[in-house]
Every structure is written in structure tokens, then in C-alpha cells.
Length: 468
Ligand SMILES: Cc1cc2nc3c(=O)[nH]c(=O)nc-3n(C[C@H](O)[C@H](O)[C@H](O)COP(=O)(O)OP(=O)(O)OC[C@H]3O[C@@H](n4cnc5c(N)ncnc54)[C@H](O)[C@@H]3O)c2cc1C
Image (cartoon, rainbow, N blue to C red; front, top):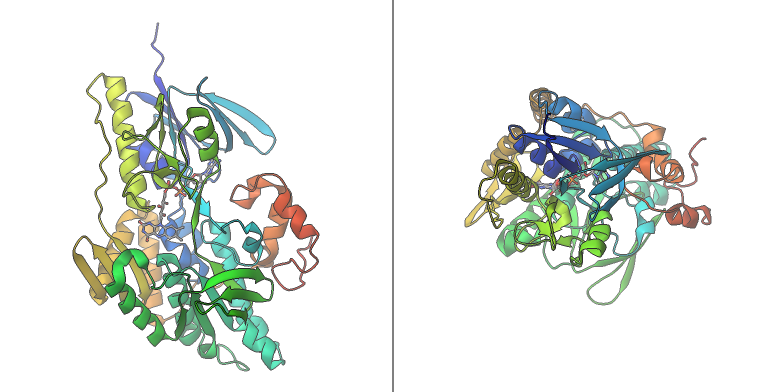
């Protein structure tokens, strides 16, 4: 009789999920990888999809294709709704097809979503940057703002259309603000007749007192200066208190309230652990941190459940930031522990994170890097950024096409991915109506939809309703 192989279920196809599966390639296990998207997403380059430098396919290769030569893994498209960690069952569905999958070891790598600090209704007007849907929607809003400004005769409305607000001055916010300014001042410079795109205002808002807080004051100050030299208005110590279709409101450090009329807004502030974390915490007694991430044990498992690992952005572990390396290293650690169990060798024990540094681009040929005591700025930092990003993009084809797109874009200031569709622009409400599956992020229940249905002006594109 043949022995049943150890069954590993991995939830998620981000850095955590994908690297867990790859790390178990030569282990005698059967792996089922369940994810709600068919692709592995390289989130660090989402901002380039949003601003027309790269296409979505370049940063989101099919997970199935990446793993096609790994015979011990099956990839399934599904939304995991529940996990019963006592009976070792993962409950998931594809639309209304419900499935249950049993496991011996489980790796949960469902990541984190955008946090709107309790004001989820802001998402309709200020999309975050977590999914391909988000990036394409932002691309549509950014490019259409210029298009509409070109034929708008009202000066105040034209100013509003050409004002862009980015909320959150972490790496994503800094990168977005820099890219929108570059797009306006350089790429679109000669494309319009009635407007001068270089007059576009880009405002970066954050409640903190410096940009890029984790990079320290020196690199933060350098970045702010660089952004300002590009024409970005940096507004620190300002908290966004309201967002609607026509603008944002914020409270400044001196207590005054200010309203900025603007069309396209980007939300790049705060993360919130995926909802599956709550289910795992309730069943295991593990705690959640303030961002809703699961506080795991030193070997990345849940208390009392040595076969359940929580890794990547969904895990809360001392001194491990929510970055790709955190997900990759925790994935490799979880896989090594499972391998030791299957092969009867000593387990690797506690997880130790090796900080390989952080980086952010500001504009073409300019970036900041912090790796331990090493601090780099300008071209050399940008070259390091380029090299590392190419290294970690999954798939040879994607690396080549990304390199070609970058070369063309850097040499010509052009952006080859300027296609925008109405689907991208107004699809969010339609997707919310269709439910959690299609939205790309988990929207449980219909509260979001219901509240927007009551608001006649709650459409992202100022009155243009999605066509049914
Ligand atoms: C805009 C942006 C820029 C970034 N830039 C950098 C950077 O420059 N450098 C860096 O190191 N890090 C960066 N990061 C962070 C980095 O991308 C994350 O730390 C990393 O992706 C985390 O990997 P993960 O596997 O834990 O989660 P994710 O990559 O978020 O993957 C989660 C996976 O789980 C799936 N999933 C979620 N819920 C369910 C469910 N219920 N059922 C089924 N599947 C589900 C998702 O579809 C996805 O496949 C950036 C992140 C963002 C958003």
C-alpha cells in the first residue's frame, strides 16, 4: 500500500505563498496553493502600472506558470473564507462553488490590505495601492483628469482636475507623488493644447513630521528636498479627516481645517491585516496587533497549533517590517520547519529576520536606500534599486519585458502603458455590487455598497455612473 504524502495547504500567492511553495520543491509533500487571484503580484512596482510605465502583466505573472515545473504543487483559484484549525480544514469558494481542503500543515500568507483607519468609505474616492485593480483604477483617474481638464472651460474646475493628492508619505506615497509630477512635467508636456500639464499640483500629505519615517531624519529630509525640487508640495503634520468625490479635508498641526479641491486621490497610508487573521486568532487564542496582524510564536506558528504558520504581512513578529523580505524569509522558515517534520530531522527553531534594508525611488535616476548603517541617495541608490527589483520580479519573460519598458521609458520620458478604460475608471462600484470575489480585496457583507447606494454623489467619477 502506498503511504499518503504529507499535505501542505498554502493560502496566498504573494511573496509569502509563492516562496513557501518554492522552498518545498524538493520535499516529499503534496502542496495545494489556494489564492483569490490567478497571479503572483510584485506589489513594489504597482505605482509604475498606475502611472503608465509598466503593464500589469509585467508585474503579475500567472502563479500557475511560475510553478508549472514543480510537480508537487497544485494551484487553485479560490477565496478562502474560513479555516477550521481544530479539524484541519480550509473552507474556500469560487463564486458559489464551495470547497473544503484538508491539510497536515497550513501556511497562511494572505497579506494585509489598505487601512482607512475606520473610514472605509474613503476607498471609493481615494483608492489604495494593493492590487492590480487599484493600480489600473488610479491610472484611469490620473490620465482622465488631464483629458477632462483639456476641454473644461471653468478655470476653478480645471485647477481641481489638475490637483492630485497622495495621502501617506511612506515609500509608496513618495514614489506615487514623484511619478505623477514626472508624468505631468515631462511625459505629457507636449500632448495637450488647452492646458499645460506641468502646472499640475501634486500634494503629498502625512500626519508624521517627516517623509519616509523608517529611513530616519537625514534621508527623510533629503527625500523631501528632492520631491520639492520636482514640484511636489509636501504637507507634514496634517491629518486627513474627510475624503469625498470633489476633494479632501485635513486638519493641520495648528488645528486649522483645510479643504483641497481635487479629482484624483491616492491612499497610501496604513495597513490592515487580512480578515483571516481574526478567524485564526479567535480559534487559537493568538493576539492581533493594532494593525490586525497575528502575533505569532517564535517559530511562526499559532499557540497550541504547531502545524499552522502565519507568515508575511499577516504576521506580527518583533522587528520584522511588512516588506517582501519579511514574507520571503518567513516563508522559507515555515517551509524548513515542515521539511524537518516530514524528514524527521531537527527543526530550525526560532525565526531570525535578516534586515537587508529598504529603498524608495523618487524620480528617474534618483532613489534612497538604507541598509544597516549604509545610506545611499541619488543615482547610485537608483541603480541599486533597479538591480534588486529586476532580481526579484518573478519570471524570465517578465524581467526582460520590464527591462525593455524601463529602458524605453527612461530614454524617451515616454510611458507606453497609457491605455485607460471606463471599466477601470468606474468599475469599483460595479465590482462592490458583485461581491467580494471580483473586488480584488475582501469586502465582507454589503455594508460598503449599501452606504454608497444611499449617497447620490458617491460615484468615483463625478456623476458618471457605471453602465450596466
Ligand atoms: C504599493 C506597495 C509597494 C511596496 N513596495 C515594497 C518595496 O519597495 N520593497 C519591499 O520589500 N516591500 C514592498 N512592499 C511590501 C511587500 O509587497 C509585501 O510585504 C509583500 O508583498 C507581502 O507578501 P505576502 O505574501 O505576505 O502578502 P501579499 O503579497 O499581499 O499576498 C497575499 C496573497 O494572499 C491572497 N489572499 C488574500 N486573502 C485571501 C483569501 N481570503 N483567500 C485566498 N487568497 C487570499 C492574495 O490574493 C495574495 O495572493 C510594497 C507593498 C505595496 C502594497
